[in-house]
Image: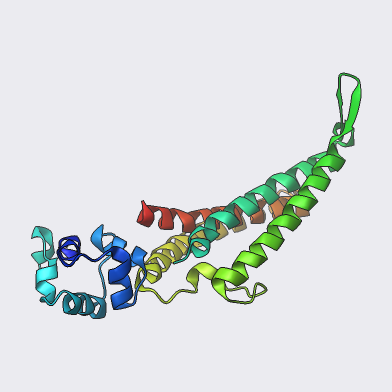
Length: 69
Length: 158
């Protein structure tokens, strides 16, 4: 699953540290999500979407293999 | 995750590995007392005593520094058995903890039966299993245990 976290973060001018503080996680967690080392929980995804004033689907995108149900 | 918690598994892996080497050397000297004294250009150096003193100072220093940083960064009781790397509320570090403990679980489910079989076999052939050998095995397992945990942290951080 891809994400546009880095893009939105750059758009808003937030550092990883700043974004982490806003949603209550560590800087490392933001880094892990951006590098696609982990998927955020639903709660964390919603918090991120709220900070960037967008929908969760705009932040996190299904890739070709992810769409198989 | 602060740096202490991040590097704690690596610190412990190095500590137990150093302890393993130290114990191995002491065990070797106990069985070969003639190797305790080294002669270089006519000078006799009581190598065993030097290593013992360095080891004592080294391990004591490590424990003091470790306790200081444990209390500073973990805000907990250093006598607690709970490792600081799992004492974390953050989602990312919980994710690391989940993957690391899964790998360590797989490691123990493989190693313990194998060691049990080996111990049983040695018992059947009347091979005398010394306490030293048990110590070597336990220290090796501990070293691998912490190394496996740190490997997961390393994979996430790179």
